[in-house]
Image 1 (cartoon, rainbow, N blue to C red):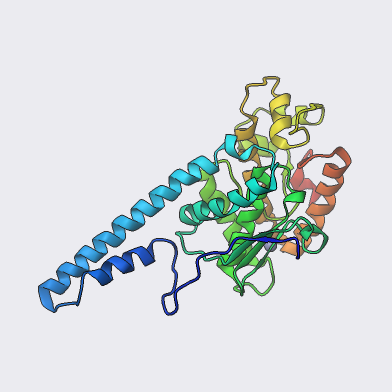
Image 2 (cartoon, rainbow, N blue to C red):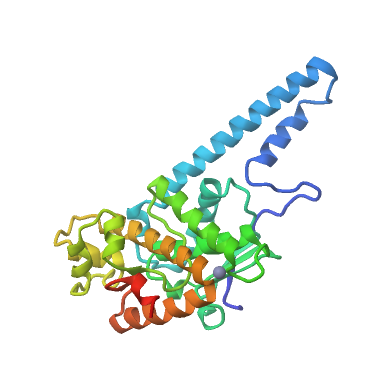
Length: 305
Ligand SMILES: [Zn+2]
């Protein structure tokens, strides 16, 4: 943990609980309105304060929505991670935008650490809910979309805390599914990862995403040499036979649907069984071909074995 980089967050004022990013500003406005008077004056002040609260919350969420459209677009997320200082600068902005757009601004985080050795101890990322600390390992992520998927997963841990009896119990799985469905309704290009190897694809998923089956078949034979070869977005672009085709957008749909399907399967069989089976299948396929996804003839049939 010595190599970890920490962004200090503004410390919460004593006795003033920080509930999202909008409330403290409104609380300050309410205080400068002076002493509360009885009857109609009180009602007026309450109405003004409520109006300011609603307006402030609306404007805060609007700002975060714009930030989300910017940060979580297909083009923005389909980028190599590159310079560590860029990742350091991106993570808190992505956290705030996602918090405002998908968590009603209710999540609180004390620090977001980058630790390139974390995968040796805890996987692609981790969350310590008591200290509200998130750690992410950029060395095991191939793009901002990839890193974003793990960030959202860790944000869910912050939200759920110890509500489940185990780390990825039914509450977590249901929340992960709900979050992916919420993201789908926004059309943004992000997704929430369930496990490290959950981009399992088959023709059924392509159909669900409204994509032609030949793209699924073409993935197996792609051989690009660009930076994103082996990433679903890059390979989809090549499989379509059109360099201008929006492989990033298609990839985001597929990854989101694949993750949602993983959540449903894990709700059925339990996370440990899903993780073991999914990791074994996908890791074998992905590692043997150097990809961040795995293609199966029929994903569901594999579970009947
Ligand atoms: Zn987790």
